[in-house]
Length: 412
Figure 1: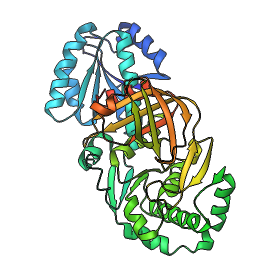
Figure 2: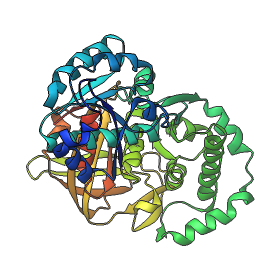
Figure 3: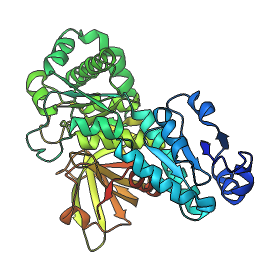
Figure 4: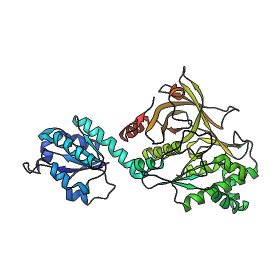
């Protein structure tokens, strides 16, 4: 991470005094960042727009300088002030001026370690937003009827994270699906079968249909330049005779975040996880909750194959049709997270321990039993909807810092 500080100093101070007068802060920042650049307004204006920048209010008396540079300032404007040379007083005045003119601002102040910690948080948030900005999410069909609290305000998704929602009719999928001959997917079906540890319910015809759907959705994603998509799975089943479970699994393996049932909040969480950690994740239902032992069983019928230690081809649990994935996940530390609410401004996150894979006949095919490090009673009292996201490894602190920096409220 590189930190670019746009230095503002009073005409009463020598510009060369910035480093010497703030040596403790600069030294602390250099421990936390790969490089710290101290720049003039003119030098900063030449940087690419997506470069992480902060305003270093080194002294008081710089309010008019910042006002004159208004058109070149980053949004939001981060005002770093350690309090020496009346810098905090100037930063507070400037922040009020900027907010009154519609520019987001935050004064970053405290001990040198607190300032450095906050700038690290904000730089990670900047990096994630940069990765998400401009990405298109395909909403294929309409969300499932039972997801009555999992929608997203498109304006909020655009404003907070730079995402664009694109509504696409299922007829596009049907058109592509119908045009794919069975023979075109024969090799892919054979390769998948060879990788699987077993195949229980599906036959060759089921696998062919499911793979044709995977190819159709991949074509749609490419033509619409989608970074992610969510699918009206059950309506698709009525028309094609297959489910989206395998297709979504394969799309996730290719880096196109794909989620079930039109659930945009959970799909966004998967995208956030990928941008923040580089990891794919597993969208699942809480299926059993024990608040005494703090154990939760999570299950769903699709998971990216790359997240598993092996998988079995099954049929979809509710419909007993199509091709679903029963994946076996590695025992060990995991993270469970959900960013929810129509404005994507609430979140839950906990580290957990994956104790075992299960094989119950009365729930979705991929099943894991987890021990939560936060109270599992969250699900029964304050849950952010149904689906939550699981990823391998303990990333709870990183995601908590990121979502806190984004101004989201943690739900417990």
